[in-house]
Amino acid sequence: MGLKLSVWMSGMTGDGSASSSSALKTLAVPTSSRLSVMLHSSPIGSGDTRSHWSTSCCSPNFLMSPCREEVIRMPVEQSSDGVRADKGIDSGLHIWEVLWSPAHRGSHAAVGVSTANCPLQASGYNALLGGDPQSWGWELGTNQLWHGGRSLGRYPKVNTQTQCVGGGRPETGLNTPGSAVEIPECILLVLDADAGTLGYVVNGCFLGAAFEDLPQGVKLFPAVSSVRGGATIRLRYLNGTTRDPPALMALCSLTVRRSLGPQRKNLTNTLPLPPVLQQYLLPNQ
Image 1 (spheres, rainbow, N blue to C red):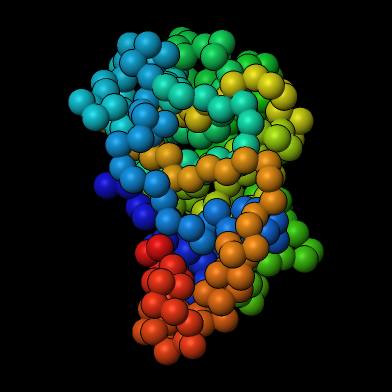
Image 2: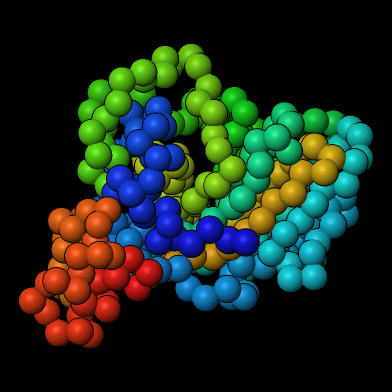
């Protein structure tokens, strides 16, 4: 049930209504060419082990699906519970998709990354992810960033100059610095282990680096924490690349796809290109 990244990018380039109607457009920031190419690429096939939650690094209050891509928090009171992915990364730029319905979040729902030493269960209700020096969490309900047991402020930040991933025009209705932005079900985690940053893509817009100065050479794992009984959270690894700059072919195809816009599926076969290149430019390639 992982959402295809190509569908996400349709929203980013104006193909869908989710991105165009989102107030988050006004909070988006420009993306690097390296990230733009990844966001316009097809996700890897399903079943990759990097989409698995860890069976050993998981609170006992989570139930795991047989495919290990979904966890469900049991209805346990006065407990904050976390789970991290089975595979961590210490180099490259990587993107994961987290599906978590707003109706099933409750309070203290946090999404982010952790080292292998992050605690995964605590008494009471709190943002467990980000509650210690080994984890970094974005609390979705309040938009607060947490690390080392303290709040680092709200995310996304209000920008005076904004840009959507697909280059769309910013909208009016910018949220005030004191208000929380409603975060939809699907969230993309963008972890750049080479630069030591973690950011998020929501409704087709990259919201910038939420955390910087992440530890270098240390494996970091996508992670979540929850206090709500019945919360169902899915994970899917979408794409990754090394620190090398994008290939010229990838940059050229990105430019062509952006130029063709939402009708590129119907217009690609009209380009004066060999069939193999036309196929390469299709949205699902």
